[in-house]
Length: 213
Image (cartoon, rainbow, N blue to C red; front, side, top):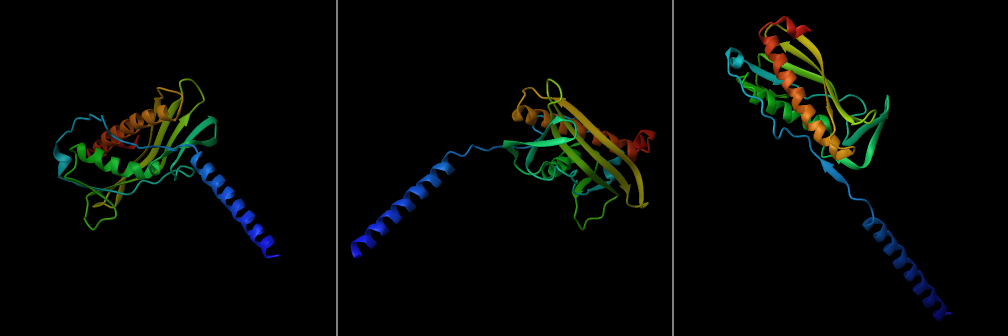
């Protein structure tokens, strides 16, 4: 009887070892995840220094459109249907990566004495709010395209009034029909988006009619 119990124990241990080995093998065979960033590398906008550089701009954290709040790399093969790459992802949600890029781009423009991300105790002259940020690769045609959109609102804090509001959109062709091609196009599109926002803010501060168009 004792020998039978020992034998059963040996069999049970062998099963556990095989099971554990199988689990380890499955983990080893899992596909590699590729992770990408949004960046302004190569963004060569020339800074302008003029009268509005005396103003302080506060920048609210941008908000993402529903469905775009995570690290998933979203693409579209059919209108209105969002899908995500299985083994490709952003290093952070696109909207979280946009926030420091927006501060960087606005600072580099030379149009402001200071650009301050909110929350902050510093008092500003103007505030920039943004929402509805989208980064998606569209395989609806060839070459595929990356579409980047955002809605912005510019507020005069001294007058407590909305100076202007506008929706921005930039579309860039992807150099290859895969996730990495989408990353390259997305970075170009984000740089183009910031160019548009920088120019628009200048129009708003100068009270140009273009601010409200």
